[in-house]
Image 1 (tube, rainbow, N blue to C red):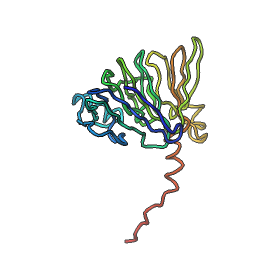
Image 2: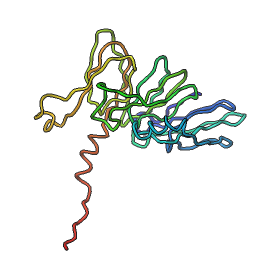
Image 3: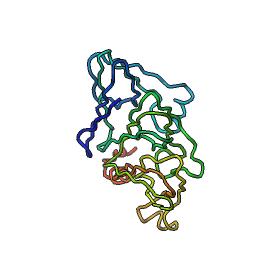
Image 4: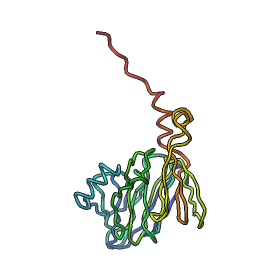
Length: 227
C-alpha cells in the first residue's frame, strides 16, 4: 500500500493506492471513494476483539476490508472531523487514541489494551486505547493538525490528554490532574500525561473535548412545557 496525503493539514484526504489483489482494512464510515472494481467485505475481526474495540476502545464494531482488482486500485479515506492524517510505519507496537484509527495494512493486528494506572481519564477512550502491532502502515487522524515529537533519552514532556493521538507502547507515561482541586475545576485544564524516555508521540493541535465544552452550552435548549 502506498499512501498519499492531500490537502494537509486542515481537511486532509488520504489516497490509499493498492496493487492488484491487495487488501486494506478501513474503519467504518471513513471511506470517501474507491476505484471501479474494488470490492468491499465487512468483518468484525473476531467477535470478542470487535466487542472490546467497540465498547471499550470507542471504535466501530465492524471494519471494512477493501480488495483491489487485478489491475490495482485505490481507496480514499478521511476523518470525520476537520483535521490531519498521518502515516505510521510500525517498527514497534503503538498505542492509538480512541477515534484516531482510520486504516491499516492487513499485516497490522489491532486490539484494545488495558491501560491500568497509565489510562487517559480525560479522553473518550477511558481506560483503554487501541494497540497496533505488526508489519506495515497505519493511518491515523487528528482534530486539527498533527505535530510529531521524538523524545530523546532522559527527555520528558507533559501533554493535555485531549491532545494525544498516538505514542510508542514502550514509552513510560502517567496521568495526573493539573494542580489541586481548585485548579482542576476552574482552570479549564483537566488531566495531563507525563511522557518520559525515548519514543515517538503524535499530538493534535485541537481537542475534541475542549470544542464540545465550548459548543454544547451554545446549543438551543428544548423549551420545557408547563403542566
